[in-house]
Image 1 (cartoon, rainbow, N blue to C red):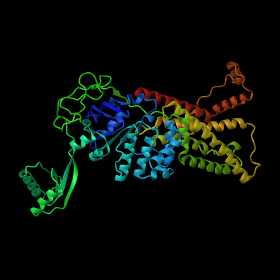
Image 2 (cartoon, helix red, strand yellow; image 1 turned 90 degrees about the horizontal axis):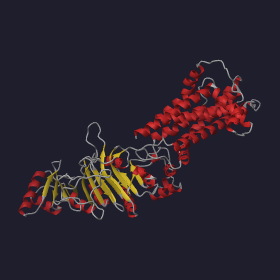
Image 3 (tube, one colour; image 1 turned 90 degrees about the vertical axis):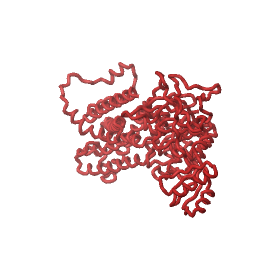
Image 4 (cartoon, rainbow, N blue to C red; image 1 turned 180 degrees about the vertical axis):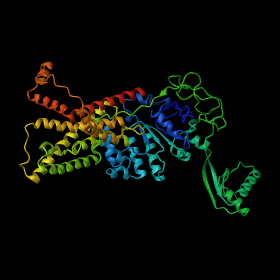
Length: 613
């Protein structure tokens, strides 16, 4: 069961709240429609329930607030708008990435594709899907964790009648299995046809809380739609004949002067009246009209919530009826429904804090599927390999460039070699793409502040950078052997320190791009941080005042071994010295400084975000 109590959105610039003390329930085993005209506060109410916006109130999902649920994906499935995924990602790839985020087996993706009728379109890109197929994929994303409650915002907007009927059938099937379904709509006919319970709101306030039968009886009325060039004369004739026959007939003139809506009559009676008086009729049809929401004019009712009391309940646990209100939620006159009124006195609903979505339960799997789920990664690696192979051949032509620079394809004209630039771009896309195409939760964006997700991104980006560095060296060596023969390539004596330097450069650029994109939430910021290392930071490091060396670090590995009582092999001493030489290099020092600043900025923004929310 879903219980929303006292939902009130925050005021903005003195405007009235979009949702004002809204209280209702969506029971288990039932489809509940939240009905309201555009701008009535339906979407704002859902966002308050999902803790996507600040305000007041509380929403219980089977007795627990959302931030108290250990695994929200298995409790609540959400459909807000279109699929928040990368447009070039396939439907199956999107679902598998979300499977890794939700901690469910990857086989669940194929099961849901078959459930929503997309089994044959799993390899289609998200951007190529039609509106109906996109909505089916969004529903599959909501059903991924097999949740108990489904919350959907205008799920049938823009869909054809056949697609809308199919979607409502899926919702009814979910409710029949013991789940709770809440969806918003602005069409009262759709609500009466597809829902078992209808909650009507207007101006952010509750105006009716009824089952479908009572809603159809009090809100929807059958009528005869008439279109004639003599609308005023026909209206007068119908009203006069109804008074003569002592029948209750209501004639309403629509906005168009040639259209009438007649309540309490039939097509045959209207047609006979027009025929007897020689009036032409261009349209005559039976319709179901919407009488619109009727505001509450009865006495105010005090209502408090947890943290400041609870609404009154009957012995059976249902809401206590107010004076003059029947079981359908309308008063004795059958017109004015019972509203939710702001609690009087000092007791107020508890505040709703805007909370970010939780990180993936399997962050490494999620990051791998995110990285290789699009062709951008493969394209960037291919560009790096081709550019490096071509540059290495050109650099080796004059014979003046050192062999390590030739193998790394690093001419003096470029601030960084292509491999380092591409590694930084891949790192920047690790966060930048997720902010552009959020995938973890609808309306929330991604969650870059989780330690597990950050460590997974750092590990995966470092592994990809090392693989790229190795492939570039192999591709450069192969191209040199092919063009100039094998005599040009000789293994230098300091190959260990060169390998550490090359690996540190690529990994450092990848991490710099990743952290900068995570701090500024833009891919371009990550690329700029990578380029700033050789362009800005290296000159600053080189211009630092250099004092004469008074002491030497010779023997540092031995002293470290004695300090930590460690018995590592003597081969490890070479690794320690190689790492020290890397840090002592201007580019290595610049990367170290840049990474330190970015880590501090990342931690600062993380702590500031936690304090804010």
